[in-house]
Amino acid sequence: MIYLVNRMHLAPRARRDLKSFWAWLEERERWFYRDLPMVRGVRWFMTSVGDLYTLEVWAGFDDMAGFAAYRAAVDTQKTDARWESERVTQDDWWEFLDSRLMSDIPCRVGFGQIGETSSSHSPAAPTTRPGAPE
Image 1 (tube, rainbow, N blue to C red):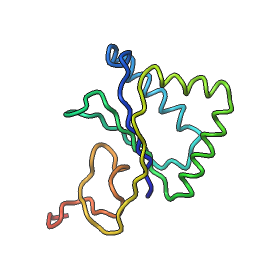
Image 2 (cartoon, rainbow, N blue to C red):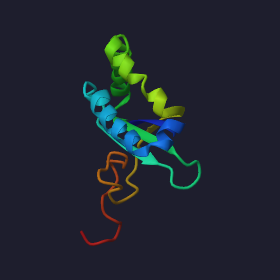
Image 3 (spheres, rainbow, N blue to C red):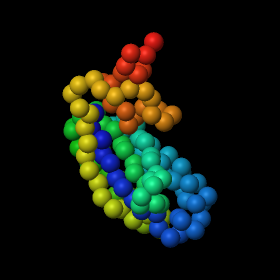
Image 4 (spheres, one colour):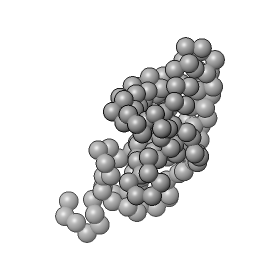
């Protein structure tokens, strides 16, 4: 798996009205990923200690071809004025800090399900603690 990881810092508007921000984020995820079937899963994390009000989102792809298809699809969607006007509302809610690509490692390490789903957990890793009864 390949993961696109973006980090964003919440804008003052989001920090002042977290309830509205979370509602906006839920709606944004629905429309943003609706026509992007190459995205296999998305996980969101929020900093609890350290740089507060920072989000990290991991979007998973089967391989680099899936990521390339995602980039091409987003570039195409940006040419749709209605879609693009909705996308840029994110600038009211956060500031992008950085992006990176990550991949799973080629061995079976790690265990357990992290969070409600395992989209940010390596599919090669066992889901039970080593040595624990199954």
